[in-house]
Image 1 (cartoon, helix red, strand yellow):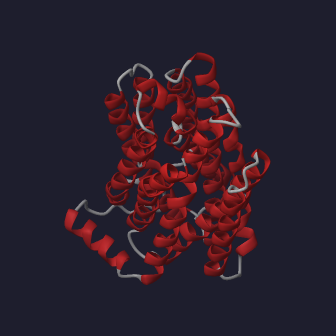
Image 2 (tube, one colour):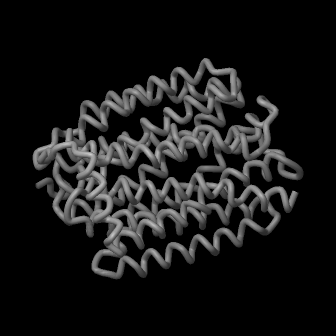
Length: 364
């Protein structure tokens, strides 16, 4: 097995982290653009938010497909094929001028984004020893937050200079670089043992995970955390684009640099929690997220930004522990277990927008 701090460890971890940056930059590309999309297509904030919700929805559904599929055909082939299709879809979105077509392509992006997260955790669970796994999961989830930052910053800056469609062209070029590096660095699986692709067996594996209360509890925690966390960012863009803040798309994109505390939390959480209670660590992360949410209610730009820094710290600390907990307690079909966790996770992201929308209209 791959041990921590070896050449093989760093190659595999770097490849998965680059893939993570690529997919999550695509996932969140429209978030700083929501006020611009609202005006461009003459739609409501909820409809603009659908450019993110439809992506998380198809992502969550397709995770349940790609996870079991990776158990049958292999992790690396799923990762590389879906990353390639994602890059091509992002490039195609550059030519869109119709809202419904934009939603369709965003849905396709979500489907292809699902490939890497469905297979990456299972790849690490099979190829890395327990010590290396704990470190790699933290670095991988830290890369998730870097991807979220990269996509939002790239899209915000490109949209401010050349219009919102240019965001997708800039990101497609970024995707191509990431894809070539992943192809170069990601080692072939050595411990993967393919199983037959049987839909009945896939459902049986998922049912088995759903009967495991340790796995289900972590799935619910991850889903509810993301339910609030990611949608707070969507609605805060409208607040900050309006009076008295009036931030442009480039500044709204830079707002997501607050994810950096999440990157730090995810990268070091494995070392901090080693030998301690993971459930208590999840609870601590949730409490920190609550404190950050309360800070965003204070109507000053400085305290809103501080609250978002605190939010990211708490959220990613809890998310890292919950994801690692699922991988650790899935004794078989790890791809299915990871997919189940992420399906809960992205279902939370999809539903959270609908939950917060009435409150947005209430305060407005």
